[in-house]
Amino acid sequence: MERKRSDSIADQLERLIFDGTLSDGERLDEVQLAAKFGVSRTPIREAFQKLTQSGLVEQIPRRGVFVRQPGPVELIEMFEVMAELESVCARLAASRISDDALRDLHDANARCNAAVAESDSESYFRENERFHAIIYRQSGNGFLEQECVRLHRRLQPYRKTQLRLRGRLKQSMAEHEAIVAALEDGDGVLAADAIREHVAVQGEKFHHLIASLKPAAE
Amino acid sequence: MERKRSDSIADQLERLIFDGTLSDGERLDEVQLAAKFGVSRTPIREAFQKLTQSGLVEQIPRRGVFVRQPGPVELIEMFEVMAELESVCARLAASRISDDALRDLHDANARCNAAVAESDSESYFRENERFHAIIYRQSGNGFLEQECVRLHRRLQPYRKTQLRLRGRLKQSMAEHEAIVAALEDGDGVLAADAIREHVAVQGEKFHHLIASLKPAAE
DNA sequence: GTCAAGATTTTTGTATACAAAAATTTAAAC
DNA sequence: GTTTAAATTTTTGTATACAAAAATCTTGAC
Image (cartoon, rainbow over all chains, first blue to last red):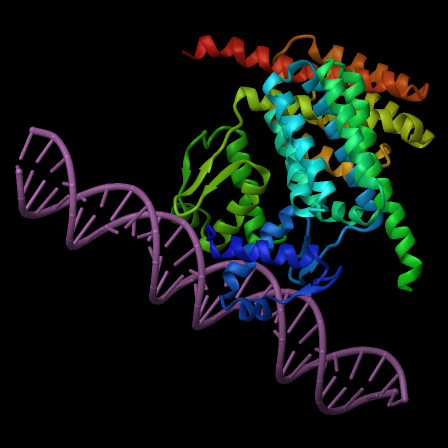
Protein backbone atom coordinates (compact mmCIF):
# COMPACT_ATOMS: atom_id res chain seq x y z
CA MET A 1 0.00 0.00 0.00
CA GLU A 2 2.10 2.89 1.24
CA ARG A 3 5.75 3.23 2.02
CA LYS A 4 5.24 4.21 5.61
CA ARG A 5 2.40 4.61 8.05
CA SER A 6 3.11 8.33 8.31
CA ASP A 7 2.91 8.77 4.53
CA SER A 8 -0.49 7.16 4.43
CA ILE A 9 -1.66 9.34 7.30
CA ALA A 10 -0.30 12.48 5.66
CA ASP A 11 -2.23 11.63 2.49
CA GLN A 12 -5.43 11.06 4.42
CA LEU A 13 -5.06 14.28 6.38
CA GLU A 14 -4.30 16.10 3.14
CA ARG A 15 -7.56 14.87 1.68
CA LEU A 16 -9.46 15.91 4.80
CA ILE A 17 -7.98 19.40 4.51
CA PHE A 18 -8.64 19.62 0.79
CA ASP A 19 -12.28 18.61 1.04
CA GLY A 20 -12.82 20.99 3.92
CA THR A 21 -13.54 18.44 6.63
CA LEU A 22 -10.74 20.09 8.55
CA SER A 23 -11.39 23.79 8.34
CA ASP A 24 -9.04 26.72 8.52
CA GLY A 25 -7.47 27.47 11.88
CA GLU A 26 -8.58 24.17 13.37
CA ARG A 27 -6.10 22.60 15.75
CA LEU A 28 -5.00 19.05 15.08
CA ASP A 29 -4.70 17.02 18.25
CA GLU A 30 -1.91 14.48 18.22
CA VAL A 31 -3.37 11.99 20.68
CA GLN A 32 -6.84 12.28 19.21
CA LEU A 33 -5.59 11.59 15.68
CA ALA A 34 -3.31 8.84 16.97
CA ALA A 35 -6.35 7.12 18.45
CA LYS A 36 -8.38 7.72 15.30
CA PHE A 37 -5.75 6.17 13.05
CA GLY A 38 -4.85 3.49 15.57
CA VAL A 39 -1.19 4.43 15.76
CA SER A 40 1.08 6.16 18.22
CA ARG A 41 1.89 9.85 18.22
CA THR A 42 5.15 9.34 16.32
CA PRO A 43 3.74 8.73 12.82
CA ILE A 44 1.19 11.49 13.39
CA ARG A 45 3.95 13.94 14.16
CA GLU A 46 5.86 12.83 11.07
CA ALA A 47 2.76 13.35 8.98
CA PHE A 48 2.43 16.84 10.46
CA GLN A 49 5.92 17.70 9.28
CA LYS A 50 5.09 16.57 5.77
CA LEU A 51 1.96 18.68 5.77
CA THR A 52 3.92 21.65 7.08
CA GLN A 53 6.20 21.21 4.11
CA SER A 54 3.27 21.38 1.68
CA GLY A 55 2.01 24.46 3.47
CA LEU A 56 -1.29 22.84 4.38
CA VAL A 57 -0.60 23.13 8.06
CA GLU A 58 1.21 25.55 10.31
CA GLN A 59 3.32 24.35 13.19
CA ILE A 60 3.65 26.74 16.11
CA PRO A 61 6.32 25.54 18.52
CA ARG A 62 5.01 24.38 21.87
CA ARG A 63 1.51 25.22 20.72
CA GLY A 64 0.53 22.65 18.17
CA VAL A 65 -0.36 22.42 14.50
CA PHE A 66 -3.21 24.26 12.85
CA VAL A 67 -4.72 23.70 9.43
CA ARG A 68 -3.95 26.53 7.13
CA GLN A 69 -6.41 26.84 4.29
CA PRO A 70 -5.17 29.43 1.85
CA GLY A 71 -7.49 32.41 1.76
CA PRO A 72 -8.83 33.96 -1.45
CA VAL A 73 -5.90 36.37 -1.72
CA GLU A 74 -3.28 33.67 -1.33
CA LEU A 75 -5.07 31.47 -3.86
CA ILE A 76 -5.13 34.23 -6.44
CA GLU A 77 -1.45 34.77 -5.78
CA MET A 78 -0.74 31.08 -6.22
CA PHE A 79 -2.64 30.97 -9.49
CA GLU A 80 -0.70 34.00 -10.66
CA VAL A 81 2.60 32.28 -9.90
CA MET A 82 1.36 29.11 -11.58
CA ALA A 83 0.47 31.13 -14.66
CA GLU A 84 3.92 32.70 -14.79
CA LEU A 85 5.71 29.40 -14.23
CA GLU A 86 3.73 27.69 -16.97
CA SER A 87 4.37 30.66 -19.17
CA VAL A 88 8.11 30.17 -18.70
CA CYS A 89 7.72 26.46 -19.47
CA ALA A 90 5.90 27.24 -22.70
CA ARG A 91 8.46 29.82 -23.78
CA LEU A 92 11.31 27.41 -23.20
CA ALA A 93 9.40 24.49 -24.68
CA ALA A 94 8.62 26.34 -27.90
CA SER A 95 12.18 25.95 -29.09
CA ARG A 96 12.85 22.56 -27.57
CA ILE A 97 9.68 20.54 -27.92
CA SER A 98 9.86 17.22 -29.75
CA ASP A 99 7.45 15.94 -32.38
CA ASP A 100 6.55 13.08 -30.06
CA ALA A 101 5.58 15.52 -27.35
CA LEU A 102 3.48 17.55 -29.78
CA ARG A 103 1.67 14.37 -30.73
CA ASP A 104 1.12 13.61 -27.04
CA LEU A 105 -0.32 17.09 -26.51
CA HIS A 106 -2.79 16.56 -29.34
CA ASP A 107 -3.67 13.19 -27.89
CA ALA A 108 -4.21 14.59 -24.39
CA ASN A 109 -6.41 17.31 -25.86
CA ALA A 110 -8.47 14.79 -27.80
CA ARG A 111 -9.03 12.74 -24.65
CA CYS A 112 -9.87 15.91 -22.74
CA ASN A 113 -12.47 16.78 -25.34
CA ALA A 114 -13.93 13.31 -25.13
CA ALA A 115 -14.09 13.58 -21.36
CA VAL A 116 -15.86 16.93 -21.61
CA ALA A 117 -18.38 15.42 -24.03
CA GLU A 118 -19.07 12.57 -21.63
CA SER A 119 -18.95 14.81 -18.54
CA ASP A 120 -16.32 12.49 -17.14
CA SER A 121 -14.64 14.89 -14.74
CA GLU A 122 -12.31 12.21 -13.42
CA SER A 123 -10.64 11.53 -16.75
CA TYR A 124 -10.88 15.20 -17.70
CA PHE A 125 -8.62 16.09 -14.79
CA ARG A 126 -6.27 13.23 -15.56
CA GLU A 127 -5.83 14.28 -19.18
CA ASN A 128 -5.69 17.97 -18.36
CA GLU A 129 -2.92 17.24 -15.89
CA ARG A 130 -1.12 15.21 -18.56
CA PHE A 131 -1.39 18.11 -21.00
CA HIS A 132 0.23 20.50 -18.59
CA ALA A 133 2.78 17.95 -17.39
CA ILE A 134 4.00 17.49 -20.97
CA ILE A 135 4.65 21.22 -21.30
CA TYR A 136 6.49 21.24 -17.97
CA ARG A 137 8.65 18.36 -19.18
CA GLN A 138 9.33 19.95 -22.55
CA SER A 139 10.72 23.06 -20.88
CA GLY A 140 13.88 21.00 -20.70
CA ASN A 141 14.43 22.23 -17.16
CA GLY A 142 13.95 19.40 -14.67
CA PHE A 143 13.89 21.68 -11.66
CA LEU A 144 11.28 23.93 -13.23
CA GLU A 145 9.24 20.85 -14.08
CA GLN A 146 9.40 19.70 -10.48
CA GLU A 147 8.28 23.05 -9.12
CA CYS A 148 5.40 23.21 -11.58
CA VAL A 149 4.18 19.75 -10.69
CA ARG A 150 4.33 20.64 -7.01
CA LEU A 151 2.28 23.82 -7.39
CA HIS A 152 -0.13 22.26 -9.87
CA ARG A 153 -0.82 19.50 -7.39
CA ARG A 154 -1.38 22.00 -4.60
CA LEU A 155 -3.88 23.94 -6.69
CA GLN A 156 -5.68 20.87 -7.99
CA PRO A 157 -8.54 20.88 -5.44
CA TYR A 158 -9.33 24.52 -6.13
CA ARG A 159 -9.32 23.93 -9.85
CA LYS A 160 -12.18 21.49 -9.48
CA THR A 161 -14.55 24.22 -8.39
CA GLN A 162 -14.46 25.46 -11.95
CA LEU A 163 -16.46 22.52 -13.15
CA ARG A 164 -19.48 24.43 -11.92
CA LEU A 165 -18.87 27.27 -14.32
CA ARG A 166 -20.91 26.73 -17.44
CA GLY A 167 -18.96 26.90 -20.68
CA ARG A 168 -15.59 27.20 -18.99
CA LEU A 169 -14.44 23.72 -20.00
CA LYS A 170 -15.19 24.26 -23.66
CA GLN A 171 -13.33 27.55 -23.68
CA SER A 172 -10.47 25.94 -21.79
CA MET A 173 -10.14 23.34 -24.52
CA ALA A 174 -9.98 26.03 -27.20
CA GLU A 175 -7.16 27.64 -25.26
CA HIS A 176 -5.34 24.33 -25.17
CA GLU A 177 -5.56 24.14 -28.96
CA ALA A 178 -4.16 27.65 -29.30
CA ILE A 179 -1.25 26.78 -27.02
CA VAL A 180 -0.38 23.68 -29.02
CA ALA A 181 -0.61 25.66 -32.26
CA ALA A 182 1.83 28.25 -30.92
CA LEU A 183 4.21 25.53 -29.80
CA GLU A 184 4.01 23.90 -33.21
CA ASP A 185 4.95 27.22 -34.80
CA GLY A 186 7.83 27.52 -32.36
CA ASP A 187 6.42 30.87 -31.30
CA GLY A 188 7.60 31.07 -27.71
CA VAL A 189 6.15 34.47 -26.92
CA LEU A 190 2.72 33.58 -28.23
CA ALA A 191 2.70 30.22 -26.42
CA ALA A 192 3.84 31.90 -23.20
CA ASP A 193 1.12 34.54 -23.40
CA ALA A 194 -1.54 32.01 -24.30
CA ILE A 195 -0.82 29.68 -21.40
CA ARG A 196 -0.39 32.55 -18.95
CA GLU A 197 -3.87 33.74 -19.80
CA HIS A 198 -5.19 30.20 -19.75
CA VAL A 199 -4.00 29.62 -16.19
CA ALA A 200 -4.52 33.14 -14.88
CA VAL A 201 -8.14 33.08 -16.00
CA GLN A 202 -8.65 30.04 -13.78
CA GLY A 203 -7.57 32.07 -10.80
CA GLU A 204 -9.89 34.91 -11.79
CA LYS A 205 -12.79 32.57 -12.37
CA PHE A 206 -12.10 31.05 -9.02
CA HIS A 207 -12.11 34.49 -7.51
CA HIS A 208 -15.47 35.35 -9.04
CA LEU A 209 -16.82 32.01 -7.94
CA ILE A 210 -15.98 32.42 -4.28
CA ALA A 211 -17.03 36.06 -4.40
CA SER A 212 -20.43 34.99 -5.68
CA LEU A 213 -20.70 32.25 -3.08
CA LYS A 214 -19.78 34.50 -0.18
CA PRO A 215 -23.10 36.38 0.14
CA ALA A 216 -25.08 33.17 -0.11
CA ALA A 217 -23.13 31.63 2.73
CA GLU A 218 -23.83 34.46 5.13
CA MET B 1 18.76 30.16 20.97
CA GLU B 2 16.57 28.03 18.72
CA ARG B 3 12.97 27.08 18.83
CA LYS B 4 13.61 23.38 19.02
CA ARG B 5 16.51 21.02 19.29
CA SER B 6 15.70 19.58 15.87
CA ASP B 7 15.70 23.03 14.24
CA SER B 8 19.16 23.77 15.53
CA ILE B 9 20.38 20.40 14.32
CA ALA B 10 18.81 20.89 10.92
CA ASP B 11 20.60 24.22 10.59
CA GLN B 12 23.93 22.72 11.57
CA LEU B 13 23.54 19.80 9.18
CA GLU B 14 22.54 22.23 6.46
CA ARG B 15 25.75 24.14 6.96
CA LEU B 16 27.77 20.93 6.87
CA ILE B 17 26.15 20.02 3.58
CA PHE B 18 26.61 23.51 2.13
CA ASP B 19 30.28 23.72 2.97
CA GLY B 20 30.89 20.24 1.59
CA THR B 21 31.85 18.53 4.84
CA LEU B 22 29.09 16.09 4.05
CA SER B 23 29.59 15.12 0.44
CA ASP B 24 27.11 13.92 -2.15
CA GLY B 25 25.70 10.45 -1.70
CA GLU B 26 27.00 10.14 1.84
CA ARG B 27 24.73 8.30 4.22
CA LEU B 28 23.74 10.04 7.46
CA ASP B 29 23.71 7.67 10.41
CA GLU B 30 21.01 8.42 12.96
CA VAL B 31 22.70 6.98 16.02
CA GLN B 32 26.07 8.40 15.08
CA LEU B 33 24.67 11.91 14.68
CA ALA B 34 22.57 11.49 17.81
CA ALA B 35 25.74 10.76 19.75
CA LYS B 36 27.59 13.61 18.07
CA PHE B 37 24.89 16.14 18.93
CA GLY B 38 24.24 14.63 22.33
CA VAL B 39 20.56 14.00 21.71
CA SER B 40 18.33 11.03 21.01
CA ARG B 41 17.38 9.81 17.55
CA THR B 42 14.06 11.64 17.61
CA PRO B 43 15.32 15.21 16.98
CA ILE B 44 17.78 13.86 14.40
CA ARG B 45 14.95 12.24 12.48
CA GLU B 46 12.94 15.46 12.65
CA ALA B 47 15.91 17.37 11.31
CA PHE B 48 16.17 14.85 8.47
CA GLN B 49 12.60 15.57 7.48
CA LYS B 50 13.28 19.28 7.37
CA LEU B 51 16.32 18.71 5.19
CA THR B 52 14.30 16.44 2.93
CA GLN B 53 11.89 19.31 2.48
CA SER B 54 14.69 21.65 1.40
CA GLY B 55 15.92 19.01 -1.01
CA LEU B 56 19.33 18.78 0.63
CA VAL B 57 18.83 15.20 1.58
CA GLU B 58 17.03 12.21 0.11
CA GLN B 59 15.13 9.80 2.28
CA ILE B 60 14.84 6.26 0.98
CA PRO B 61 12.35 4.28 3.04
CA ARG B 62 13.88 1.52 5.13
CA ARG B 63 17.28 2.45 3.76
CA GLY B 64 18.24 5.74 5.33
CA VAL B 65 18.95 9.31 4.32
CA PHE B 66 21.62 10.36 1.88
CA VAL B 67 23.16 13.74 1.16
CA ARG B 68 21.97 15.10 -2.13
CA GLN B 69 24.24 17.80 -3.48
CA PRO B 70 22.75 19.29 -6.61
CA GLY B 71 24.94 18.57 -9.61
CA PRO B 72 26.03 21.21 -12.15
CA VAL B 73 23.01 20.58 -14.37
CA GLU B 74 20.53 20.94 -11.52
CA LEU B 75 22.24 24.12 -10.33
CA ILE B 76 22.06 25.71 -13.76
CA GLU B 77 18.41 24.76 -13.86
CA MET B 78 17.82 26.31 -10.46
CA PHE B 79 19.54 29.53 -11.47
CA GLU B 80 17.40 29.61 -14.61
CA VAL B 81 14.23 29.30 -12.56
CA MET B 82 15.49 31.93 -10.13
CA ALA B 83 16.14 34.26 -13.06
CA GLU B 84 12.63 33.75 -14.39
CA LEU B 85 10.99 34.18 -11.00
CA GLU B 86 12.88 37.40 -10.32
CA SER B 87 12.00 38.53 -13.81
CA VAL B 88 8.33 38.08 -12.99
CA CYS B 89 8.81 39.98 -9.73
CA ALA B 90 10.41 42.89 -11.56
CA ARG B 91 7.70 43.00 -14.21
CA LEU B 92 4.98 43.09 -11.58
CA ALA B 93 6.92 45.49 -9.38
CA ALA B 94 7.45 48.00 -12.17
CA SER B 95 3.83 49.09 -11.98
CA ARG B 96 3.36 48.66 -8.25
CA ILE B 97 6.59 49.77 -6.61
CA SER B 98 6.45 52.53 -4.00
CA ASP B 99 8.75 55.53 -3.74
CA ASP B 100 9.91 54.27 -0.37
CA ALA B 101 10.94 50.98 -1.90
CA LEU B 102 12.82 52.74 -4.69
CA ARG B 103 14.71 54.69 -2.07
CA ASP B 104 15.50 51.46 -0.23
CA LEU B 105 16.81 49.94 -3.45
CA HIS B 106 19.15 52.88 -3.97
CA ASP B 107 20.23 52.60 -0.37
CA ALA B 108 20.92 48.86 -0.64
CA ASN B 109 22.93 49.49 -3.78
CA ALA B 110 24.98 52.19 -2.11
CA ARG B 111 25.80 49.87 0.76
CA CYS B 112 26.60 47.09 -1.70
CA ASN B 113 29.02 49.38 -3.47
CA ALA B 114 30.64 50.34 -0.20
CA ALA B 115 31.00 46.68 0.72
CA VAL B 116 32.61 45.93 -2.65
CA ALA B 117 35.06 48.80 -2.12
CA GLU B 118 35.99 47.44 1.30
CA SER B 119 35.97 43.81 0.15
CA ASP B 120 33.51 43.10 2.92
CA SER B 121 31.84 40.01 1.49
CA GLU B 122 29.71 39.49 4.57
CA SER B 123 27.90 42.80 4.29
CA TYR B 124 27.91 42.58 0.48
CA PHE B 125 25.80 39.46 0.67
CA ARG B 126 23.53 40.96 3.27
CA GLU B 127 22.85 44.07 1.19
CA ASN B 128 22.60 42.13 -2.06
CA GLU B 129 20.00 39.91 -0.44
CA ARG B 130 18.14 43.00 0.75
CA PHE B 131 18.15 44.43 -2.78
CA HIS B 132 16.58 41.31 -4.22
CA ALA B 133 14.20 40.89 -1.28
CA ILE B 134 12.80 44.38 -1.89
CA ILE B 135 11.99 43.49 -5.48
CA TYR B 136 10.33 40.26 -4.36
CA ARG B 137 8.23 42.21 -1.90
CA GLN B 138 7.30 44.90 -4.41
CA SER B 139 5.90 42.28 -6.78
CA GLY B 140 2.83 42.63 -4.57
CA ASN B 141 2.43 38.86 -4.60
CA GLY B 142 3.17 37.40 -1.19
CA PHE B 143 3.29 33.83 -2.42
CA LEU B 144 5.72 34.72 -5.18
CA GLU B 145 7.84 36.57 -2.65
CA GLN B 146 7.92 33.51 -0.43
CA GLU B 147 8.99 31.22 -3.24
CA CYS B 148 11.71 33.62 -4.31
CA VAL B 149 13.12 33.90 -0.82
CA ARG B 150 13.13 30.14 -0.53
CA LEU B 151 15.02 29.58 -3.77
CA HIS B 152 17.36 32.51 -3.19
CA ARG B 153 18.31 31.05 0.15
CA ARG B 154 18.90 27.65 -1.37
CA LEU B 155 21.20 29.11 -4.02
CA GLN B 156 23.05 31.36 -1.59
CA PRO B 157 26.04 29.07 -0.97
CA TYR B 158 26.64 28.62 -4.69
CA ARG B 159 26.46 32.34 -5.29
CA LYS B 160 29.44 32.85 -3.02
CA THR B 161 31.76 31.08 -5.42
CA GLN B 162 31.40 34.07 -7.68
CA LEU B 163 33.48 36.20 -5.36
CA ARG B 164 36.46 34.57 -6.96
CA LEU B 165 35.61 35.93 -10.38
CA ARG B 166 37.49 39.14 -10.94
CA GLY B 167 35.36 42.10 -11.99
CA ARG B 168 32.10 40.26 -11.57
CA LEU B 169 31.00 42.24 -8.52
CA LYS B 170 31.51 45.59 -10.21
CA GLN B 171 29.54 44.48 -13.25
CA SER B 172 26.87 43.10 -10.97
CA MET B 173 26.48 46.48 -9.31
CA ALA B 174 26.07 48.18 -12.69
CA GLU B 175 23.30 45.70 -13.46
CA HIS B 176 21.61 46.58 -10.20
CA GLU B 177 21.61 50.26 -11.20
CA ALA B 178 20.07 49.42 -14.56
CA ILE B 179 17.33 47.41 -12.87
CA VAL B 180 16.47 50.25 -10.50
CA ALA B 181 16.42 52.71 -13.40
CA ALA B 182 13.98 50.53 -15.32
CA LEU B 183 11.76 50.23 -12.24
CA GLU B 184 11.84 54.00 -11.76
CA ASP B 185 10.69 54.42 -15.35
CA GLY B 186 7.95 51.91 -14.72
CA ASP B 187 9.27 49.89 -17.65
CA GLY B 188 8.27 46.38 -16.64
CA VAL B 189 9.61 44.62 -19.72
CA LEU B 190 13.01 46.27 -19.46
CA ALA B 191 13.28 45.63 -15.74
CA ALA B 192 12.25 42.00 -16.26
CA ASP B 193 14.84 41.47 -18.99
CA ALA B 194 17.56 43.22 -17.00
CA ILE B 195 17.10 41.18 -13.86
CA ARG B 196 16.67 37.94 -15.78
CA GLU B 197 20.06 38.49 -17.38
CA HIS B 198 21.53 39.61 -14.08
CA VAL B 199 20.56 36.37 -12.36
CA ALA B 200 21.03 34.05 -15.32
CA VAL B 201 24.56 35.25 -15.79
CA GLN B 202 25.31 34.13 -12.26
CA GLY B 203 24.32 30.62 -13.20
CA GLU B 204 26.46 30.77 -16.30
CA LYS B 205 29.43 32.18 -14.44
CA PHE B 206 29.00 29.42 -11.93
CA HIS B 207 28.94 26.92 -14.76
CA HIS B 208 32.17 28.26 -16.23
CA LEU B 209 33.74 28.30 -12.80
CA ILE B 210 33.10 24.67 -12.01
CA ALA B 211 33.98 23.70 -15.57
CA SER B 212 37.35 25.40 -15.16
CA LEU B 213 37.88 23.77 -11.78
CA LYS B 214 37.04 20.29 -13.00
CA PRO B 215 40.28 19.55 -14.92
CA ALA B 216 42.41 20.85 -12.07
CA ALA B 217 40.71 18.50 -9.66
CA GLU B 218 41.44 15.39 -11.69
C1' DG C 1 -17.72 40.22 41.48
C1' DT C 2 -13.23 40.65 39.41
C1' DC C 3 -8.57 39.92 39.08
C1' DA C 4 -4.35 37.63 40.09
C1' DA C 5 -1.35 34.10 41.65
C1' DG C 6 -0.58 29.42 42.43
C1' DA C 7 -1.76 24.56 41.57
C1' DT C 8 -3.37 21.14 38.34
C1' DT C 9 -3.98 19.31 33.99
C1' DT C 10 -2.81 19.09 29.01
C1' DT C 11 0.11 18.91 25.57
C1' DT C 12 4.32 19.25 23.21
C1' DG C 13 9.20 17.83 22.75
C1' DT C 14 12.62 14.32 23.73
C1' DA C 15 14.38 9.85 25.34
C1' DT C 16 14.13 5.11 25.43
C1' DA C 17 12.27 0.60 24.30
C1' DC C 18 10.71 -2.59 21.01
C1' DA C 19 9.53 -4.62 16.43
C1' DA C 20 10.22 -5.34 11.67
C1' DA C 21 12.92 -4.96 7.69
C1' DA C 22 17.36 -4.74 5.43
C1' DA C 23 22.30 -5.67 5.43
C1' DT C 24 25.91 -8.55 6.64
C1' DT C 25 28.06 -12.52 8.02
C1' DT C 26 28.52 -17.31 8.43
C1' DA C 27 28.11 -21.83 7.10
C1' DA C 28 27.02 -25.45 4.14
C1' DA C 29 26.49 -27.55 -0.37
C1' DC C 30 28.12 -28.19 -4.87
C1' DG D 1 36.60 -22.01 -4.33
C1' DT D 2 32.17 -20.17 -5.28
C1' DT D 3 27.49 -19.63 -4.47
C1' DT D 4 23.42 -19.71 -1.82
C1' DA D 5 20.67 -19.86 2.20
C1' DA D 6 20.13 -19.35 7.03
C1' DA D 7 21.43 -16.81 11.12
C1' DT D 8 23.10 -12.68 13.16
C1' DT D 9 23.61 -7.96 13.36
C1' DT D 10 22.21 -3.20 12.01
C1' DT D 11 19.15 -0.01 11.24
C1' DT D 12 14.81 1.99 10.40
C1' DG D 13 9.98 2.70 11.88
C1' DT D 14 6.80 2.78 15.71
C1' DA D 15 5.31 2.65 20.55
C1' DT D 16 5.74 4.10 25.06
C1' DA D 17 7.70 6.71 28.86
C1' DC D 18 9.16 10.91 30.76
C1' DA D 19 10.16 15.95 31.21
C1' DA D 20 9.22 20.66 30.35
C1' DA D 21 6.29 24.15 28.83
C1' DA D 22 1.72 26.01 28.10
C1' DA D 23 -3.14 26.15 29.17
C1' DT D 24 -6.66 25.74 32.38
C1' DC D 25 -8.66 25.61 36.75
C1' DT D 26 -8.90 26.88 41.55
C1' DT D 27 -8.55 29.67 45.28
C1' DG D 28 -7.85 33.76 47.66
C1' DA D 29 -7.41 38.79 48.02
C1' DC D 30 -9.37 43.17 47.08
